[in-house]
Amino acid sequence: MYRIGQGIDFHKLVEGREFWLGGIHVPHNKGALGHSDADVLLHAICDALLGALSLGDIGQHFPDTDAAYKGIDSKVLLQRSYQLVCERGYSLVNIDSTILLQAPKIRKYVDEMRAAIAGILNISAEDVSIKATTTEQLSFIGREEGIVATANVLLKKNTAVV
Image (cartoon, rainbow, N blue to C red):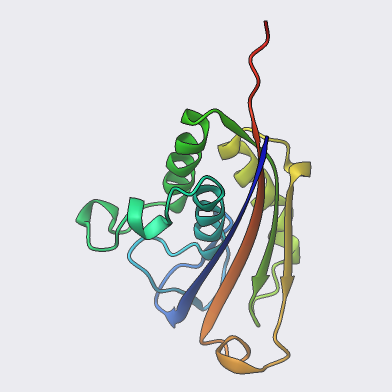
């Protein structure tokens, strides 16, 4: 049995914050504003994983009203989200994601992001797709006021070997 999940996350970009994306630090003059490290890509993947099994969303499991999650590394949130998936007898087949941002250009960081995500989820980097696009200077993304990430995941029910 297979299950598909979809996730999306938005964050405002501000000066004075580190920019974390796909589990790595990306040099930039702005960073995403949030209760955690505000890694929109990892948050979208968390939501996709949780949604595939009707487990709610990242805010339900890791609320921004809980001081325990203040400044938390989103890699921890991703690992915990995937643990919930594994506990229900599923494994991850692949991820397809898209990041919408005007700047910085992230092409040179994509392989490192894929490796970081794959390492957390115990899959091959070849099973992690990360694409990026600008909005051609349209909207809050084009004005470099924010960033959006979407993610789709395919989960497969583990079968017992007899």
